[in-house]
Image 1 (cartoon, helix red, strand yellow):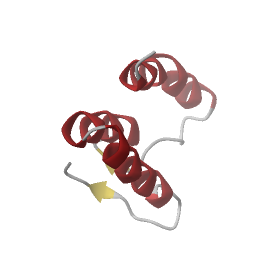
Image 2 (cartoon, rainbow, N blue to C red):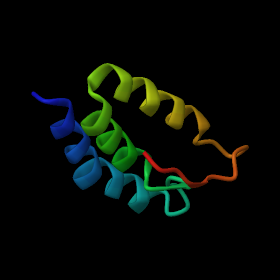
Image 3 (cartoon, one colour):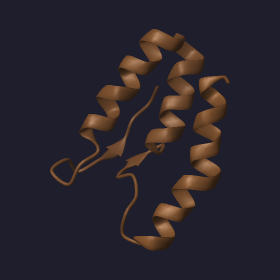
Amino acid sequence: MNLKIYLKIYKKVISPLIHYFSPNAGCRFYPTCSEYSYQVIKKYGLVKGLIKSFKRIIKCNPFNKGGYNSC
């Protein structure tokens, strides 16, 4: 399966479940980490997109204020 399909499944199925069971959980960035990953993989290709996605996910923690990130 294509990685973009997995990201869509995560956004449509897994993410809503996380928010249901833990209402305060969620990405502190805009666009969300999954949407950002989808966009950078589409824009930069698989390898560079995954690297950028990984760096973004590492930043998504309580010690980072979050905010807007453009692709």
